[in-house]
Length: 108
Image 1 (cartoon, rainbow, N blue to C red):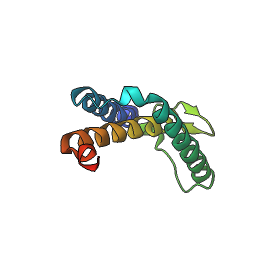
Image 2 (image 1 turned 120 degrees about the vertical axis):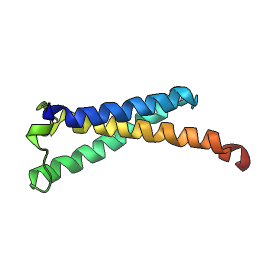
Image 3 (image 1 turned 60 degrees about the vertical axis):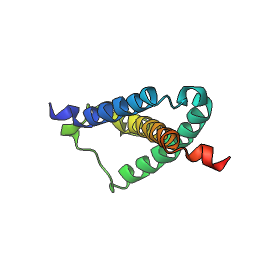
């Protein structure tokens, strides 16, 4: 079961982000294009960074805690998913906080 640790954390984060998005009606679905473009830039940048760090042996992933599927320059699938799930949850949380605090209304 140890090999499911990383994916389990990602699943928890993703479910929380989806819950925030639905419960607070953030409208993230209307902004999917800008989110997709931004997330692809994040994915490209951090995939390159991870690849370099793995190559230099400054960074590694415990084989006992990942599924073992590697993509893009020997980076585990969980790490690629991290760069998709975490930004999604962050943006959903940001939009929910804007809505809850009325910050957007105050600025107009």
